[in-house]
Length: 164
Image 1: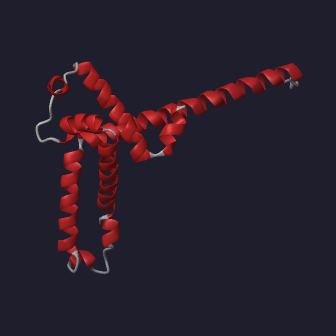
Image 2 (image 1 turned 90 degrees about the vertical axis):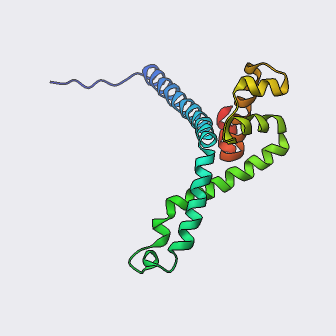
Image 3 (image 1 turned 60 degrees about the vertical axis):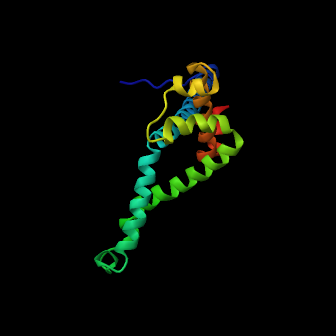
């Protein structure tokens, strides 16, 4: 037969302290994941910038050509059919505004990002470094700082507060 025993005050305090520590660690891990995801997502946006911009052009063409056709029939909800495409357009407009602001805020780091990600033939760190007469490692640091800055500009205050 199972015997039920009560925990002492000291055991309860120890247990509560351990639970509190585990909960705090979980919150800190979640904050780190949030910041890491923001940086990762910003790099993905930069790597795919030209493709996403082309997608936005295609969406504009589709919306123009599909209005007044079968797609706008009462059986179809054009908004729901194009919702995911519209999200891309909105996000890219937001990214473009952030990039324009960053270009003014830090023109050198913007130029590094532009040469790495926005050019048809992206430049190597060595080539960009020769443009500024710096080492490729400096270019990598500038790129990392640019991604960090853009993450804040694109994803907002959560990146700042969760980085602390």
